[in-house]
Length: 371
Image 1 (tube, one colour):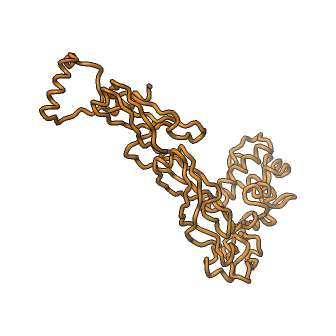
Image 2 (cartoon, rainbow, N blue to C red):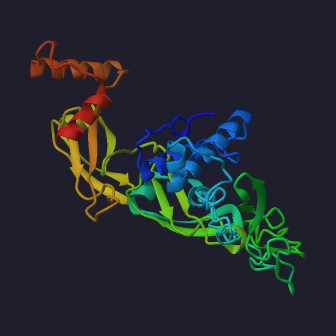
Image 3 (cartoon, one colour):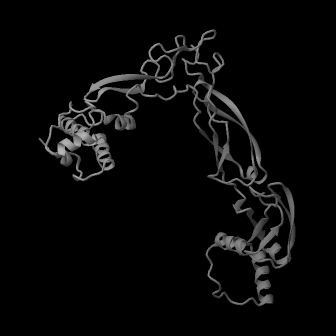
């Protein structure tokens, strides 16, 4: 017969606490409900027998003196030491205390809706009424899941606990385990007459309108959260959240740089030389612009307070207009003669290398950022 100390993996002078800890570790590993293998079952019997002997002072003393170690000898007469370990891992042998039954009411899932905005919407903010296809409360049963006039009944299998107990005979005696009731799915009640409209779900799919004020300053990729505007949960549970993902459409004339708006103004060569006054249409109405005589291509004209209202703030950005001087490409004889005369009078220098030019729009953007 195997040595009990070797079976438990402890020294012969091990304390009762050391023996108990060793047994608990091996019982967790070898118990038939955890490890159903035949070898594990045999080892479990040896471990249990060794613990019964060594945990009882009288039996341990007789064993150390070479006396009988029968598992049925001694005043305790059996597997008295397993009660603590089994209760620790599997619940009380007198009947496991099961948890509460499940609730049919659960929180609804979150929903994601994508919305496309114009740049003008970003400048001022906009109100939108969005059509959302989602789960809503069933009008027929109002979330009860039952036909009108009926209600859930207590499960006759688990008697409302939501769990059933199973007794297994083992070397330890009767072992009681608990698991969700298969009849009521752990709810503790059944619905004998489910609502015909929602098939007992307490909710149905439908389209509904969600009204939202989208603030100024949003940008592509931003998600706005609307708490409680998502789908209703099963059995009329609380709504999830609705997330609004924003996409801003490109504008033909304006682009965004932070809280500023950028635009390009085409100016004829005579107006660039002589100066001019013009009116442009910004996103919030006409704006007068004055071009000084000799304005250069790439110059930036700043109009304060005609940009975008920031998402968190009230001070609007600016409208920055980059000048693009348009050089005529087709001249008649008289126009050409005038230009040649102008060139002779101004004695303009010959073309020469200057600052590296990355392209008009790149240059304008650099000036916008640095200006």
